[in-house]
Image (cartoon, rainbow, N blue to C red):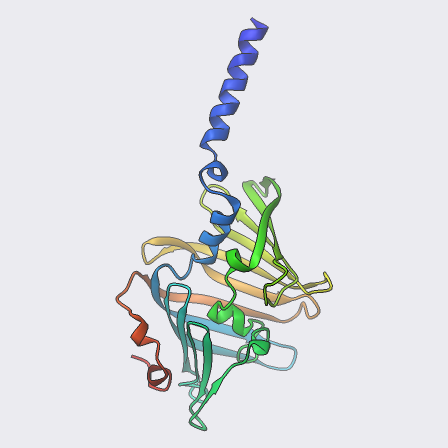
Length: 253
C-alpha cells in the first residue's frame, strides 16, 4: 500500500511539473513576454506621467505609438509649454524634437541612461532601446508563494558585449497570469538604483496589463514617477513609414 501511494504521489508530481507554466515557456520566453506586454506587435496609447521631485512636480499627457521592438514614437500632448516635444526610435536611430526651437537632435548611445523630461524614467525605458532577451542572460533566482501568489524571481545579468544601462535587473512575475509585480535595477557597482512597481491590473485593448507603474529612486525615496495608462489599443494599422522624421516634427494625429 505504501509503495502504491508513493507511486501515485510521484505520478501526480510529474503531471504537475509537466503542466507548469515554466515548462511550457522558458525563463527567457516569459521575460520577453513581459518586456513586450505593453507594446504587442503594434500599439497606440494615451498615458499620464506624474513626476514628483524634492523641488517640483509636474504631470504630462503623452501619446505613444509602437511597432514591434524597432519603432516607437512618444509625443507630449500637455502641458502647453512642452506640447509637441517628441522622441522617435526608428531602427538603431533615436531623435528628440524640440518644437520651441524647432530643432531635431539625434541622441548618442551615451544618453540612453539619461532622464526623460526630468522624470525617473530613462530614455532607454521610454523607447525600449535595450532588448532584454538579447542583452541579458536570464535565470530564475527564486520561486514560491509571496503575499498569497505564486511567483518567479528572475535575475538578469548583462552579456559581456551588451551596451546597457543597468549592471543587473531583478524582476518578480506572477505565475498564474505572467503579470510583472516589481523590478529592481542595479548600477554597475551592484548598488540598487531604483525600483519599479507594477499595479492596477486591468484589461485594456483586449489583454491584461498593469495600467500603473511607479518608479522610485533608491537614493531619493521621497521622489517618484508614475505612469498611468488612460487608453491602450493593440494590433493597430501601422507601418515603418509612420515612424519618420516628418512625423516626429508634426502635431499628434
